[in-house]
Image (cartoon, rainbow, N blue to C red):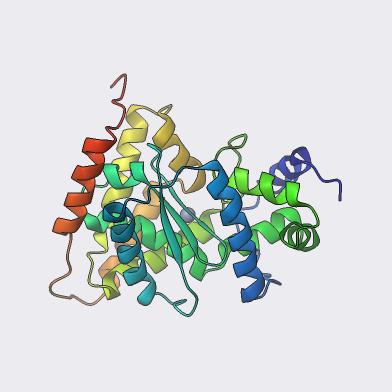
Length: 275
Ligand code: ZN
């Protein structure tokens, strides 16, 4: 196989106009999990993880709680924290989730973090990653990469997904998939006893930060993969309004605040240069 990164970029550019994720999914769950496993190995060569149990087990516990209340809780999820200021999170096919430290530090309370994590879990539930990659790369190329026939390609794809490549990403799913993942996130948080408004308030905050400093690297990254828009916030709020009233939904937890304070002390976020 002689495909190169420029071919991938070309395919991505050609498919960039499509707003919808292909409904065709020819990849089985075991194939999807194998794909995720291999890509996660490549991603983890490129990024630095935070394995400190105070942080890692908290994020894992919160994620697993949401997974339990998701519509795809029959597969294991591998949830890890990436040491970077960038405000982002991403999911690989088959249940591999990465939450950036900068996201935890930018969230004000647990419900905001849960909203974004629920959204990433929503991409796994909707199998958006497998669909998007099938569409962008073609099934044969993709399975060839996973089967090790072209390990270089797997590495390049993984680098793209980790955001360490040219800035293009295979995890740009389109509006329909983003809305679908948001819908799952609202339901997961609500069912898990967490206030679903967190996702909406977090997106609003990110939109405001982005308006202030559109070039700000950390914020820009989230905008490139999961652009928070007014439409998404309104969508989420409408979904929330349709849910039956429920008492005791929690907005925050002492554990979240402890983790955030710990991160802020150990990894101070770069202050914005301009207002
Ligand atoms: Zn998304």
